[in-house]
Image 1 (tube, one colour):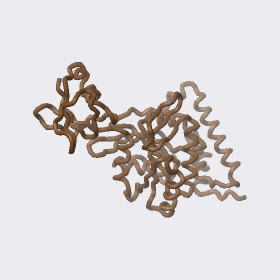
Image 2 (cartoon, one colour; image 1 turned 60 degrees about the horizontal axis):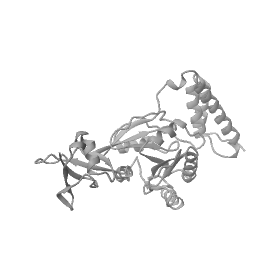
Image 3 (cartoon, one colour; image 1 turned 30 degrees about the horizontal axis):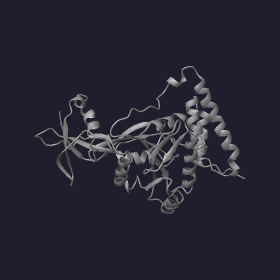
Image 4 (cartoon, one colour; image 1 turned 90 degrees about the vertical axis):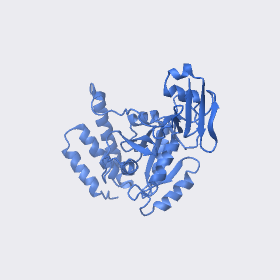
Length: 329
């Protein structure tokens, strides 16, 4: 069976032959693996490419001090929460992040443009959420550092290409591959639980490129096939469809609330909330404002839309999103 190699593959192969360093060769191999036609006639070629890449990576990792060179995969958390954005090659992760944040991550029409994790800030009303763009994730080559980064994140956004008829297969393979790395992607309504050595992260699966042909059909299949297994939304980073609603879904995924502090006799500053975990108490809010408030706390007054108007509460009172709290010490 003829290989019918694509022009993109042939160009990547040319670059591979001209590459001088192991890093350059690995990048070319990644492009070759992503662009080679997937059929029986190329199975041996695919296996050979993966073997070459594994050997190059092993050689890099075995060098003394190799792990200290180049950018790392650790990203300091910032904002209301950290969301790791993952997805297969050419799913449009970087383009979607640009639409959500207004930033300008490197975007190109070829795979593996993103080489290392890069943080960007997404504004949702009066808070900012950190979105971390990551290198493409392939079921055949799951980067261990990327998995460890995802394990420490607050939650995950997984981006798929709805124009790709293999989107469902790619999702199933990724879910299985990550589970093999002890990382389980759970729907947004999943009950939080912990097990030794097992990491469960609330995940929102985003079907990107909803403006392209076959997107609607693929989205319907994903919803039906993965019903109750994932939280799924569709969007178009290019046309902007669903982007505003996606910002809200990402914020809700974090399971946090915004609480405003009020000084007695003055109005609350509604532009700069304290961000707390859902079901936090007045005492937990006091601890966030200042450690001295915990020891000196006497009582608090709470204002809540449509419910409370300065009601006196104790330290165990459970707060809700956008409560206004006046602490008395």
